[in-house]
Length: 116
Length: 111
Image (cartoon, each protein chain N blue to C red):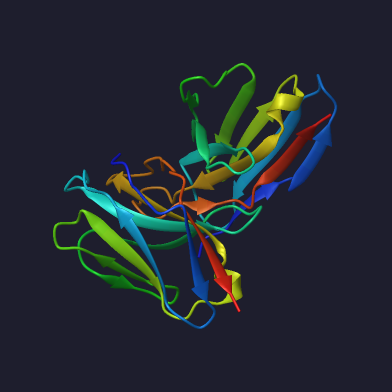
């Protein structure tokens, strides 16, 4: 199956700093990628849809100025958590679909963010 | 996307078949049924999907009722490594549509 890689797998940062998470499709092109957040013992919640070459679409209640998304190529999308606070501590997961196909989504392994 | 209903948790003995049900009574004609699972602290993993016919792959079988209002994921010989949260999701056809995750079923496989 197709591979989606996230980096880093885990990160600890201080309050007020920014953290960038990368999501790469290693063996296929992905026009669209999705970013999810998952708090402990809860399900995945969609944050935003990342579209290559255009602005991301954010779900209601997700601050676009706090969670910056860049999708500059067909294989890379980045999520930057700006001015992180402890309440931003969570498990962040990306997914990607092969361009032009209505197939399954391929997920990254997730990034555990801890803000101290 | 249609809403799904799954039991909160299930247990299964290792080596036995695990049958995970899902209700999706409001599914539309152009919506597929997808199953994913999430092992602790990992990203979800695709298992199988179908429209109206039963499907089988190397991981599992998917049985969809004739009226498409419910389905069952079958893991024929569960192992300890199958312990995970299993999500049943229905989504419209079309390219790269988003997935809406419910609470899923926590499957515990025991010795």
